[in-house]
Image (tube, rainbow, N blue to C red; front, side, top):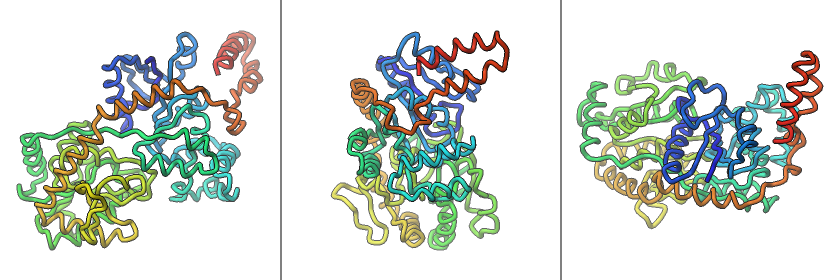
Length: 458
């Protein structure tokens, strides 16, 4: 299949960027012809990677069979929205809530009216005054309440989310519009690789030596962006409380600190600071895998959540690590165990420990204390985790799901755009035609031809 693939790719520091590039390589090896379209801010363009502004004329010269849009709740995807509205295709939601990203995109350009319109379109039963919270800068965690994805779902040929739990939760948002809910499907997210015993041993020796930790240290690890949403303050408090019961415990905080989080301030003055290492951003998959393999337990806590599936968590499952997560609706199909009772939630062997967000501090301490002292439990969870990953979350299985989804999306008709707000249907060609004469007749004539071409293509 000939595909236009809209997604950030490395060197953009984004988990989606890395996974998207990896998936494209697999799909190309399977015979698909894929052109990647990226934001013009990306400094280096490899073969088969193009600036998104080139898509319109390239598509006009030789139409693609399908456009695939990789969306996450970050500014890295800002450039994709306009193309997704104009060229309906397969929309992949790595986060089923995109409110932070879409609001930032609109409000930073002072498009307050457009934001209000999209907010009410997304939430037809909401009080219109709620939109003023974001317009006036009082967004905070309120963004997590409203997904702000109805415009994408209403124009896409098909929408997929990672995991049936995430897809079900998203469909529930469209209870008033069954035709939109019926457009949402699930695919697996594949990431990580099995780790050999020799590689694991080498990683454990290397990382412990690097930080001056003893060989028998019990290492807890946190991976990915270091932010309040990763519950870093709660983890630090739990680690300090658990350390007297598990004196050999160490904590690894591996990732780039978020701009809105003062990690140095959070660590300052803590009695456990000497048992904590902060290696910073891990620039390669190899470095990330090495540090995960060096851990005994990884802590993959996310709250509030945009209904994402953690890539570092999948890597930890693949590496056979014991993991701790928050019990979230979109992951309820994953076999887990509650640290308050140590009873599993399913018949299948538990692959992780899942804590109730309403009992977070208590449950997190229970989980860390037991896992820090019980090597047999860590081993049992690790074996079940590796088996679950091999069955559910390999890159090859993800590629199989993508091929089925792309084939289905290609067969579906494009959705008429008349159902979305008017500002998303306009090409703004008339506005351009009114502006360009100010630059002189030569510029006006040449530009008018380009506007006509773009307007026809849109």
